[in-house]
Image (cartoon, rainbow, N blue to C red; front, side, top):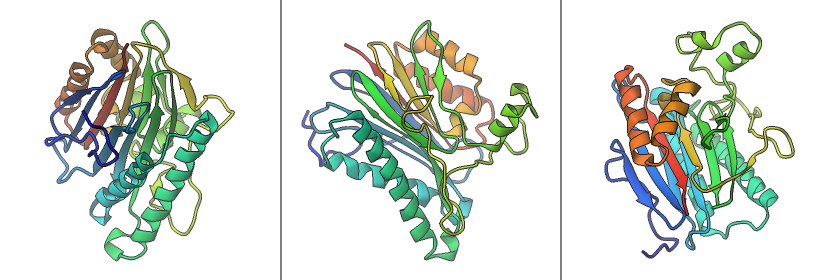
Length: 280
């Protein structure tokens, strides 16, 4: 297959159904569903290899702002990152990290600039999680409560730490893990792209040279999951671990299981997921 820079992203004709694509060293599954309650899907995503297939760029963006432009904010986020595929993959890990960091800031600027030009779009924003993945490692960054999970059998399941009010309450001991799913402030984030007055800063994690590290080593049979909160919000870490223990060998089946669980649990939000499994 010709993977030139003009190839479209791996976006299915029907994103609500799980789609699977296999590359030389990875299998990719994707889904983006409106859920059962919302009137439109304000999530957006991108997963696409560079032309030589040496690396994959993956992005999940969850729009915020309802009728005020959440869908547009997520589109701007994805479109801003898509432009990276027209450039070579940076040679060093630190340069790859800086490129993703800069692009998140650029997307934030674009969202705030467009939002300032229309009353209907004022305050629009998006959470985002992004990863640059090669066969041996990945660099990841996020803002908000869209998550990345890194699974390796018989090891601790890594996940990003949400920029959210409930996570802060949890860390302060004000609530328990059991309270999170039903807490009235569970959808409030403490960082996002756009969605702020003026030029206020927003948080991006992980930080360079800090723990947790934005660079993670990858091995054959490792699985990555990037997801909006409409998907991961219906499952505990233990449940996601259990699904991975059973279905990590089949990314499409694993993602279908998560989708069905979220919909059976009410499907109150848009839900989007990307699964990438490293293979020989």
